Image 1 (cartoon, helix red, strand yellow):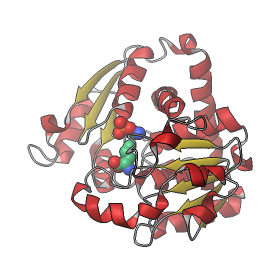
Image 2 (cartoon, rainbow, N blue to C red):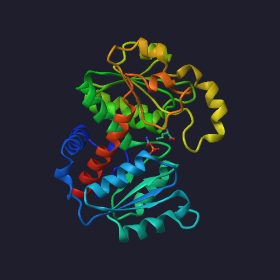
Image 3 (spheres, rainbow, N blue to C red):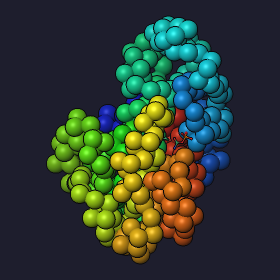
Image 4 (cartoon, rainbow, N blue to C red):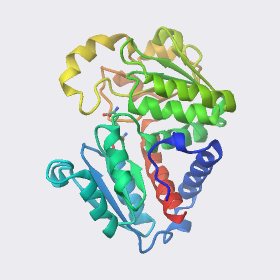
Amino acid sequence: MSHFISLKYFSSKEIEELVNLASRIKSKPSDFKNSLTGKSVGLLFEKSSLRTKTAFYIGALQLGAQAIYYAPEEVKLGEREEICDVSRSLSAYLDLVVLRTFAHERILEFAKFSSVPIVNGLSDFLHPSQALADILTIQDLKGDIKKQKIVYSGDGNNVCHSLIYACAILGANLTLAIPEGYLPASQVLDEAGSYCKISGGEIKIAGSIEEAGRGADVLYTDVWTSMGKESEKDERKKVFKNFQIDDKILAQAKSGCIVMHCLPAHRGEEITASVVEGKNSVVFLQAENRLHAAKAILNYILKK
Ligand code: CP
Ligand code: NVA
């Protein structure tokens, strides 16, 4: 059985297959209309979601499957019921579970007891379905991912970690602008270093967003305060204030630079309103691509 928990369990060939499948689904959705008829997909979310929930829920329906959504207050993993019992019970009803949670260990624990595939719909550590849609977006708009200077500014957590894995495995060039104390986990950077040796990719840490952003083909950011970290909001605003994507940073990037954000966006914090609404912004195409990527993941995993 194959889960979709981290991109690090996938080879470059498999990630390319997934991106190409997403691309095919995007260009001809009718070809995949009944591909998952008879399958049932559960979405178990312990945090809020707009895009991930809609992409997997509607994506499942568009592929002919059925979907059921459990909101954060419904199941109360580990509170009303042990993770191992929820996992084994749902395995009896469903063919796949998309799980959004806090600690990544909760996904691993859930997967350990599941007899159906688990898709990581975001944990504090990773957001792999986002990264897949991001690669699709970059490839669609800019072509070969290996030829781009991709810059990520912000917190070195879930979205950043999955982007690092994707870039390292695929052989892309990623520069990070991240304040001290918020750098990606050393485990992720070490593993990425090993993948880069094989793929020819490069993951660099720059001293500032000004330095990182010069000549960028892609500027990417995410919220400074992720879900679950709300009590640190004020402190984070101070720490991250010099890591905003604004018109000045964009002006130093290449002229056709695309600006990406996984959303939700906080205008005036990690990105200015003028950049998110500006002509370089592709955030809503990126959001759309979450649907095609989600469908590709469901199709790929359930057809295996
Ligand atoms: N980008 C993303 O995962 O959005 P949601 O949190 O709304 O699902
Ligand atoms: N880093 C953000 C991503 C939201 C899609 C969070 O975890 O809240």
